[in-house]
Length: 500
Image 1 (cartoon, rainbow, N blue to C red):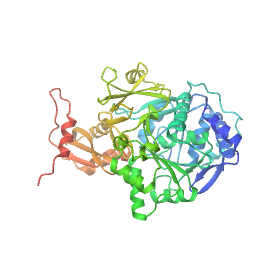
Image 2 (tube, one colour):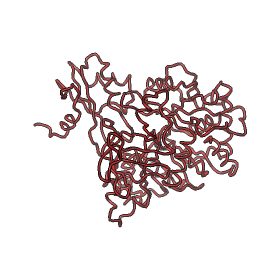
Image 3 (cartoon, one colour):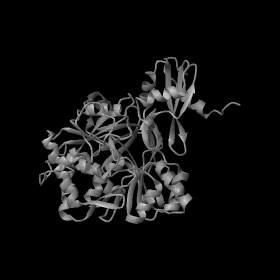
Image 4 (spheres, rainbow, N blue to C red):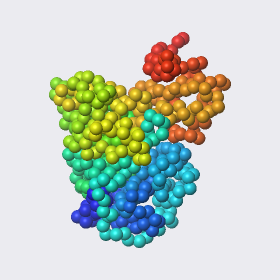
């Protein structure tokens, strides 16, 4: 079923219900939200966009993001959300690989591929909304592609994850069944990127007719979030662990206690026990944990509000250190290298099967076959299940670095560094960091290299959040007998005390 049909149903039932907010200002009720999305779909048709065509969205958080997204679906086309933090060259690669015919992007987005672009607030945007659209969204079958989400891969190039109407429907139902109830009085706050999990959560909030708010800053500012929570009330938001830490720090400094924050769903990286305990002491029982990945969006396991809050349970601490239990519509297994299930307590690869699991990778049958075997998605993450079904992560995908809740794959950074003429060899790893989860560290072999030179080199090639924060210049990298760089040894070096 077309996700835009959920918007139509809500608007038909409650047309005057407030829908879109920029800060504390209501910009549109549900009738206007529906009509703008339908008009946007009509504008896409006039530009030659047909059902199944891909339309990319490459911009920071704003209410027009939701209008464009639901307008693309209304037309039967496929949304390609592109992380607004990416370098223009990286976004160009995604739009080319996806075969996008149009890009919705702010002025000065840095794209150079030559695709037609429309910027919110421009004359082109006004033209898109100038004519009313069809009364009904385009009919979609359950296997129709809706989202083409690009997630970094260990090859250094992102892969397009195909999410169908059935995938989005299952993930939305799972949210309402296992994560949180949603009511019309609630507010979905988009402080994390709408191209990722925070934006994905617009779906259950549209289904229930809740309000949608983008902060005036367009991003995450703790003091601003406290102001909005107090003004609007009943705030729901997705937050990476580093965001929860910043909210806690702001509360300590200001004496505020997050009045109006109803639900904070956290995920995207490990949350230290001390951090979530302190956050709960300050804000109360508002926290819910989820674990997922692009290939099974936000829907592998969840730790409920009650489980996070139940200090009296004898297993509370161990469960709080887990990522919870399987969502309603999925099965979770921990398996050996051959995919055979392991007994409770043994560490293996986390596998998941169920309705939210992707249809496959875009134009990459080989990667699809390697990742989905016998219906089971191999996540690449390592973990263990206990006897009650609680999953504890023991490692992320072998080399992935999670910084600020965002995955960075070292090979992509390494390949960018190796294009510098002075770099002979390089290895990139993560160093644990209490605020960001991990910091990116580069070990570089070369001659007459300067940090400033390498930073400038990367600035022209990859996004800022992927660039190393720490540099080590070495004469050689540790390797095994087969010439493979031993990242485990490099990690041990980071643990060693500094000489002198």
